[in-house]
Image (cartoon, rainbow, N blue to C red; front, side):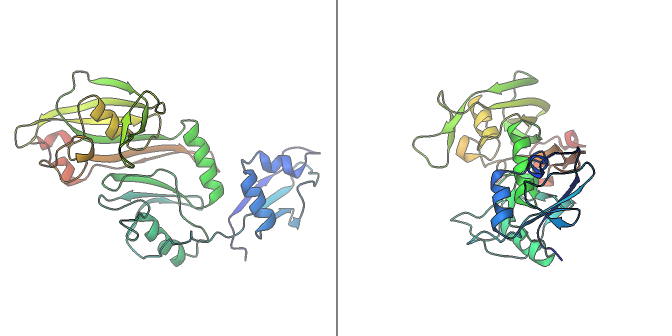
Length: 305
């Protein structure tokens, strides 16, 4: 039994080179090289063929990618994953706060990536970890994972073309003057920090839409606002930087001017992921409700009902 990821499809016309048919499936040059040199196969009607093979319409083509190995240094751990959706190509999970998506120097273990290694090992999934939509350590909510490098490549193309709809909800300091606004401001690395980002003229184009869901007050009496945010670009710390830029940092986000007197982490949760399935082209939509502790920042809890 083949352990590598399989891609199966039919030839669409007579006389086409196998190479051209494969190219239409979005397989990258890197992927094709891995197939050729690392133990993969390309079959036509069950027979191994080269990419120069001439196809007949209706031929059954099977591309078998070589099995993947876990990245060097990635420690295998067995921990709980809250799985929302899974098939042969994708895995959608809900990430809790206070856990890294991938390991860091400070936290080499206990990340989603570590637990994915354990999950893949338990279920004999011959893949390494491919995170499509990463969340910061303190941010909670939906995360998309590709179960093979080819799927990761296809999802990366969707991201590049703005076809993955990512939306978040947050609690921010203060009350906004506009119920809806777009923040279009370039983001780059702050010169005095290896972590912090800022709005700067030489930064990358960045676009965030902000919609007010409810205004209210914390139990301390401080004005706060519950907002919905849509990312049109995916810069590091984009939401956090943009909200601080307009003078309304996230509650709990000390790095960008928020206060932890009301909440022990940045009050940010990924509530929506919409995308096209990379293989079936079916539209997928996943939602997640913000967590109970975040609901309680505002004194008027009924806003979340």
